[in-house]
Length: 207
Image (cartoon, rainbow, N blue to C red; front, top):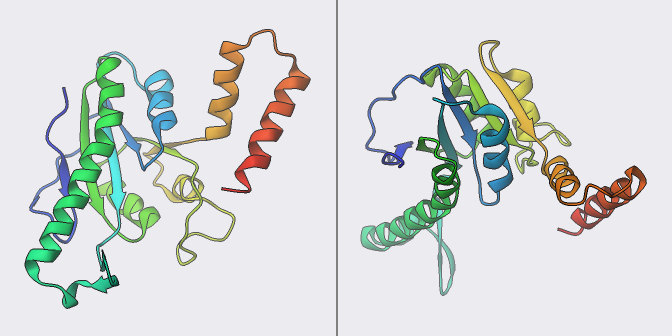
C-alpha cells in the first residue's frame, strides 16, 4: 500500500520533508512513464527497497474557461479552487497507475508532488534537501530553454549536474521498447531488430 501523497510547493500545506532512507529509489513520473517505473522495479529495486514517485507539475497561472484561458486574478476564489481541485484529482488518478504497478510488484511506494515551472532545477534542488541517493528518470525533452540547452533532455541535464552522492539513471523509452520486443520475439534477427527501432524513431518525429 502507498502512503498519502506529499506535496511540496507554494500552495502546499507540507512544512517538513523527511530525509530519504538508504533503500529509497526515487522515480520521476509524468503522464506516460509506466516504462520508467517498470525499469526501476526491474533494475533498481531490491528486496526491502521502497519506491518514491516524484511528480512535478507547473504552477497554475491561467485557467481554461468557455471564453478562453483567464488568469487567476480574473476569476473568483471559488472558481480557482474548483479548477485546483480538478487538477489535484487528475494528478491522483495519474499516480494511481504507477502505484498499482508497484503494488503488483509488492514494493512499498510513496508519492511526492512538487510544484515548479522548472523541472530540472526542482529535481536538482530536491536531491540535497531529501538526501536522494538513487534517482530514476525517463528521457523527455524539455520545453524550457532557460535551464536545459536545446537538444538535451531533463534527464541528461540532471544526471550531469547532480551531486556525486546521487546516482541518476536515465531510462530511454526506445531502449525499453527494444528490450520488451526482444523478450517477446526471441527469434527476431539483429537486422530486423534494427529496422524495428528505425520505425519507432521515424514515427516519433510526427508526435
